Image (cartoon, rainbow, N blue to C red; front, side):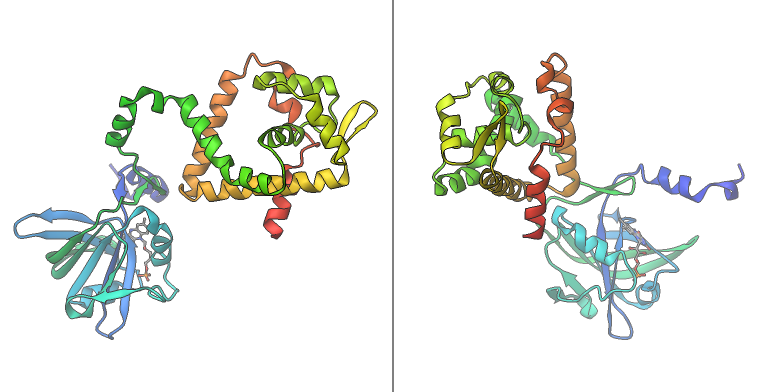
Length: 332
Ligand SMILES: Cc1cc2nc3c(=O)[nH]c(=O)nc-3n(C[C@H](O)[C@H](O)[C@H](O)COP(=O)(O)O)c2cc1C
């Protein structure tokens, strides 16, 4: 086979099928400066004597520091070190700026917050095409209780532990999707409910607001149909109260926000968005997108028999004040 005809991109993509952790390897150069780079070529070699290896691209600006240096440290990154990994995967930045460092043998820089750390003495170096393979004897190591960052097909990933999934599935009630979604929804609303109380509003006002936020301009009958689907009745007294407070008006049989009502609604929705952002801090951006995508799929699959007025394409249109709430939130 003529290997020189390999398409480098396709070759790289095929290699990316091999799922790895992510490390930052650091050293102290002969010029007494700190060097480091992100590397996923790390692997274990020997238990006795304890040895590890990794490889560095000959074109890397820190290659010389590693091949001339006597020691290096390998840091296996934890899930919350994705941005550090990105920092060390670029050449031209001060990678160590503002990092809390410890020092190992020959003053090699040691980073905090990783899953595991190996301090090594460089024992062998091998030519490996456009890379140099560095083998190190492990002089000391640390293992911290932190979940590792994962790299697969060119993207960062996180592990979902099968043992934790197993544990949850024992208690069926707690693992029922409806319960999980309901509980997440309830807890997501807690900060908003507090804000509502401070504004003198009640929980059911938020429900009305939620439905009006994508159905403003509906007739009373249409609004009733939307409520009907939630299993709760729309209380006419509640609507009357909103009208009396100057938040809603009936205009040619259609319900519309007054300016005051719209401002209040947008403010509440901004609270809701803020609560969402806070809740999503527990997930990476990618996980949050996946979660929404998967829930969206369930909504689509279970909603095929829904009445037309409940279908997204019919209700999620121009009369939607969520975008205005977004604008408020992003401009502060
Ligand atoms: C996940 C990931 C893994 C990487 N693995 C390696 C590797 O094993 N060896 C290597 O030389 N470069 C690797 N790189 C690329 C280097 O981190 C990148 O070229 C960096 O800019 C080198 O820094 P330097 O030029 O300051 O030496 C990897 C990058 C990423 C994002």
